[in-house]
View 1 (cartoon, rainbow, N blue to C red):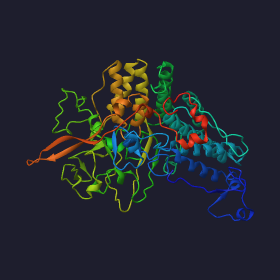
View 2 (spheres, rainbow, N blue to C red):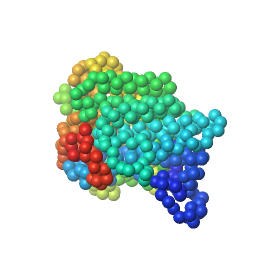
View 3 (cartoon, rainbow, N blue to C red):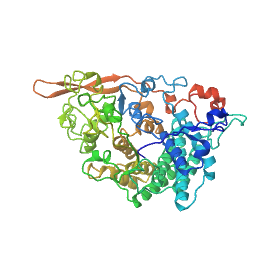
Length: 550
C-alpha cells in the first residue's frame, strides 16, 4: 500500500464500552466514522485493516520500529545520534526502567485492534462474490498481521501472554500469565495457516498493493519463525525435531515462491536488488512515502551529499566481507593488503558499503582526515563516525530539499529463505544440500563468489558468515547473534571504525579507530518488559522461560 489509512473511531458504545454525551454523538465529523459505520461498510473495514500494518518494521516513524535502528544496535553498525535509544543498549543501561524499545505496548495495541476485527467481521455485510472475496482477504490479512505481531513479541521477550479475545470493562481481571515460547509459536502457526488459506500469492494491482500481505509472505514468516524456534536461544536441548520443522517450512516456502514466479534477481548490478522495485526476489516489501526530508537516505548518506551519517557500518561489518578469492581478510593466505583494504573484495562489499575512494553520485567519497566526507568537510557534524556509510538501499539521484526516500523496504526476500533452509540442513547434518542452497546466493550473476565446500562445524560457520554479509542492514544481525547465543562474544567488544590519513604521494594510511566501548550482559539475550507493564499485570513476573528480568 502506498498509504496507510487512519480512522478516528467515535462511538457511544465504543471499543471500551464507555458512554458519551448525546449532543456529542449527534455531531458526526465528515472525516470520522462511528463504530456502527465501520462494521457496516466493508471498505471502511479495509481502511481499519490498513491501519494495522503499522505493526510491521517500517522504515518510517509510524511503525513499531524504524527498520534501520536494528543495525545501530548490533555489531554490524553504529548509531551516531541514538535515535532509537541504542546507546542505552550498547552501554549496558537497558532494563525494566529503561526498556529501550517499545515493542510490547505497540504490538499489543494492534493485537487488540485485530481481535476487535475478528469479533466483528462476521457481522459485516458482504453481498456478491466480489464482496465475499474482499472479506476473506481481509480476514487473511488480519491473521498474517497478528501472527507477525506475536512473532515480534516472542523474538524479543520469549514467552508472552497469548490474547485472542477483546477485554472490556465487564471482565473481572485484566491480568494474564505468559505462555511459553513454544505455545507462542503454535499460536503463530495457526494464524499463518489461516493466512495462507485466505490470501492470494500476489496482487494484479501491483502498485496499489505494495505492502499488502500475501500467502507468499505468510510462508516466509513461517520459515523465519520456525528457524528462530529451532535456534539455541529457544531450543537449548537442540531438539532435532525443531530443526526438521524449520527445514520443512523453509523448503515449503521456497517451493511455493519459486512455483509462483519468484527467483534470485540476476541483474549484473547487485545494488539493484534493493532499488529496483518489485523485482522477482522480493516476497514482501513496503514503499517509502517520498516525504521531503524523510526516509533513510538522508539519515544514512555521507555529509557532502546532504546526508547525516547517523547509521553507518562498523569495521566488524567491513571485515566480514571476503576477498574475491573467498578468504576473509584475517586469513594470512588471503592476499589482503591493510594499506589497500578495499581492493579485490566480494562484489557485495562494493554494493553495500561506501568507503574512502568509492564512487557515489558521480564523485569520490572522501572520508580521510580533511576530506569532504570527514569531520573537516562541509557540514562536518554530519560526518560518519566509523569511516564508512551505507550504500545498500541508497538512492544516487535523490534531491533532499524536495523529495524523500522512495525505494521499497524489503521485509522478506528469497535469499533469506535459501539461507534459512541451508542453516537448518546443516544442523541436520545434510551438508551437501546445505552447501547447494547457501551457494545459490554466492553464485548469482552479480556476485559469483567461490563456492563454499566445508562440512560440519566449519560449514555452519560459513553459513553464518554468508548470512551476515547477504542480509546486512536488513534487521537480521541483532536477532541472529541472540538466537545463536553468541552475542556475549560478538556484542561485548568495542565498536571500531577506521582513521584514514592522506599521504603526500596521494596514498592513504589506515589505522583502527575506537568509536565506542560496548557492553553486553547475558540478560540482553531477551528484552525487558517495561516496569509499567509489570505493575499493571503482576503475573508477567511468573515467567517460565525468561531467567533474566524476574
